[in-house]
Length: 133
Image (tube, rainbow, N blue to C red; front, side):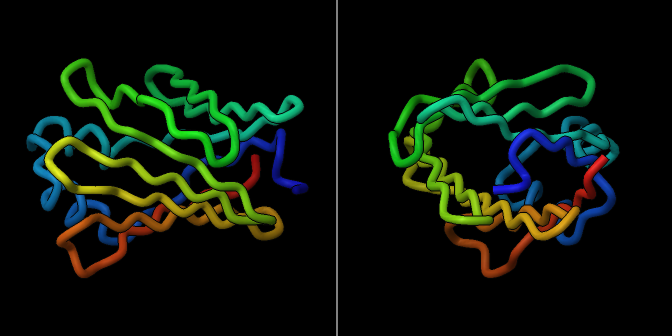
C-alpha cells in the first residue's frame, strides 16, 4: 500500500463528459467538473481511512473497509456508500434512492492512479488519470 499518504494530481480524463451527461449533471456544474484539476490523497489510521479530494474546496470522506455509510454528494443528493480496499485497488460503490449505483474503482500502480467510473444503465467507462505529486 505504497500509495497511502501520497498526493495524486489530476492529469486527464476519458469519457467523463459522457458520464456526467448520463447521470444528469446540469451543464454549468458539468463545465466546472470538466475543468477542475483536483488532487486526491488516501490516508490510513488503524482501521480508519480518509480520502481527501482538493480542488476549489476540500472534501474528506472517512470510512472503514467494507462498512456502508451515508455520503452527501450535494446537499440534495445522498448515497449509501461502501469502500473496499484490496491491495492496490480501492473500490467505492455509491447506491442511490432511485436504484442507480456508481462505482469508482481507484487503481494505484507506481506513481499513477487511474479512477474507473461506471454507472448503472451506461455501457461505457469513464477514466480519470492522476500522477503522484
